[in-house]
Amino acid sequence: MKSYLLLVALILSAAMTSGQQNPVAVDEEPHHHVLFRNEFVIVIRATLQRGEATLYHVHAHDSADIELVSSTTTEQLLGKAEGSPDTSHAGDVSAESLKEPITHRVRNVGSGPMDIFHVEFLQRPAQASSQAAARVSAENTSARIYNWVIAPGASTAMHSHERPYLMIAATPMRLKMTAPDGRSLSEEVKPVDFHWIDSKITHTLVNDGVAQGQIVEIELK
Ligand SMILES: [Zn+2]
Image (cartoon, rainbow, N blue to C red; front, side, top):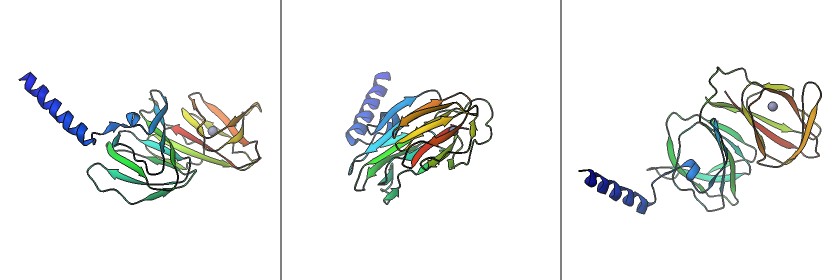
């Protein structure tokens, strides 16, 4: 009996493989490059060249996205028809809540690459969520997104992060971070540079450069 079941399992798995459409976990999909993971988040850079498509893959968590370039893609849910083209713009931020896992593939139907900074939220800290640190640009049940587009020489309002968060550079920038006591730290950031910060921080972000810059903070609720 056992060997019969094993045989059935082998046949099924062979059939699925030959059809290619056995979905993979998002972090095993070849166009999804895992940059970082801990108990709270998986950080992924998803890239598709013009004309490329992902394999069918499964998303099982709430997520947040930063569009690093403008791109046009289609989405196809497993067993459904391919959707119509959808254009995203460089600098767009979004957050999605998932009630149940979805399985889909994405095709780049635009004239240039697709390049997305994608975060999946595995769990939230045990203690209750606090107030937002600043104006919320997008949110889901797991996280809030603060989107700082900062003119040269300008700075954000001072704000406090009570929760663990990711700070991500969406553009190049000479970034200066200033604490309430006046101490500051300057660094030259480039797109996709990011930090995971799990201590309480109060700061302003200053654009010390000559071009507009964008910093995104994705904070756990
Ligand atoms: Zn901040």
